[in-house]
Image 1: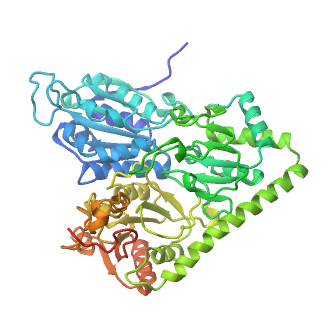
Image 2 (image 1 turned 180 degrees about the horizontal axis):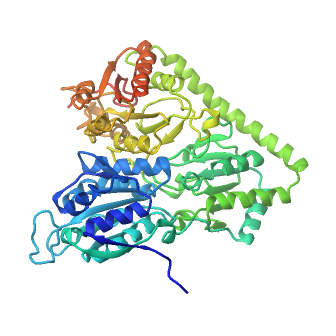
Image 3 (image 1 turned 135 degrees about the vertical axis):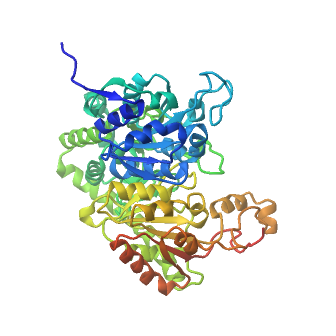
Amino acid sequence: MGRLAGTKATGTGGHLLVEQLKAAGVKHLFANPGSAEGGLFDALVDAPQIKLVLGLHEGVVASMADGYNKASGQVAVVNVHAVAGTAQMGGQLYNSARDCSSVVVTAGLLDNEYYTDLMGLSASTGFTQKEVVRQFTKMAWEIRNPEAIPLATRRAIKVATTAPFGPTYVAYASYALQAQNITATIYPRDQFTVPDTACPSPEAIESAADMLAQCRFPVLFVGDEVWQSGAQAELLELVEWLGAAVTIGYDAFKSFPVHHPNFMNWHRHAKLPPQTDLCVSVAGRVIGGWGERETEASWPIYDKQIAIGMDTEHLGRNYPVDLAIAANVKLTLQNLLAALKDRVPESKMKPIRDARNEELARRSSAVRAEDQARLKAAFAGKPIQPVRLSYEFERALPAGTIIVNENYTADHSPISFGFRQAHNEKRYLGISGASLGWSLGAAIGAKIACPDTPVVVSIGDGSVMFSSSAFWTMKRYGVPLLVVVWNNLNYQTVRYVFHRMNARSAQTGHYPGIYLGQPDIDFVMLARSQGVGGERVTEPEDIAAALQRGLDANSRGEPYLLDVVVARTGGGADSTWY
């Protein structure tokens, strides 16, 4: 039996790395370079097929790769500098790990075991560079043999793109990247990656269909694997056939249209019908809240629970299930709906479905009425109320806009996120990890992945300063993003937690480390210093025109920033103490 045909390549270790990336279909390298990676960057001179996207900090380029993967579904490759650069991207690698993003991180390695064990920019004595990223990667390698560079690169791509997905890390010794006249075999991606096509067993489908056919009222708790497996349409069809409620957790995507009458929002706080007796976790992940103690009472109790997904770590993780189906989400939903249709005739299902839909529409309509009442009450408020800015977003942004969100606490009515561009639905990209400094870089990656789709950043003022050098990259590469800063001079999420403690901060109105004024940051000037235009918005009636000017700039190929001064909300909002 013959071996699959590869292509022999000869050159430096860096050349072999670039050739393998090209063969794997990699078209962009998001990078902050260093001397240890000289062999890689030298090889890029003769590889115009791979576009270098330079960022001025490792955290920024790591989030670029994350956003590229989330928007495109394709593996993203990022390069950082040796051990210090590896450490500096840690917060964004954490986000990628929490969201199971297919990101491959490459780095140079200054080998502390080659001769001396104390080199500049090397791991500390007795430690390896891999240990820096161990918590936040599926696998990590250190490669010292130049002939192994293509193989290690293939392994990193394979592991990152095999479900459940997640980031991987490869550190290549600087001398291996610079080694001359090395020959190795390069293979195309389809010869070393594994498709995510694990089918559910017929017995599991039969059991799940029986439970759904016999329950009083089902709720589907939806997670990110729905998006990653491309199962949004199948999920919607199943929900509408059942008349089921839909809830979500802390996720990176909105895999179900949030404007749908069956959407009940956050699972932990959803106001579900009292007869709800079956929960189907469709790759839903149970994550504890920030600053809160997780107990068994934190999770709703149901008579029966089903869990579906490829990430077996989250099937029955905290709470028992009656049936676990470890399989591709898209294939499982397809098979499950077919089995249900075989079991339950439409004449029997229709009255059940109609009754469920009526109940859910009543509940979701009541929530939306509350949102509208809040909007009406705050519409002309000054400073600008967050709900007003959200309303103007909804009106101004073009159909199919991707909103890259890093704004956690604005008290706004839901923007109508979905996934069907034909229905003019806006799409949401976020993070479940909540490590700040993600969205500016992620939006650059998302726009590079989807150049014909409008991309807008919604970001809190505190988050901007974690990654503000990203404006430089936007300008250099002509990445036309609209960046909207919700500026309330506060780390508001943290203040909420301090206030809920009901201790000295709440009693005195003194919230240490929270107020971001005195001096106030001029975000417009910050962006302009890096070549990006912008303006400050303080009046509610000026928001719409400012958004349009930003979108007009984008249509000319220019990035643009809006610094929108919004009101603080919640306990301690009036405090300016520091």
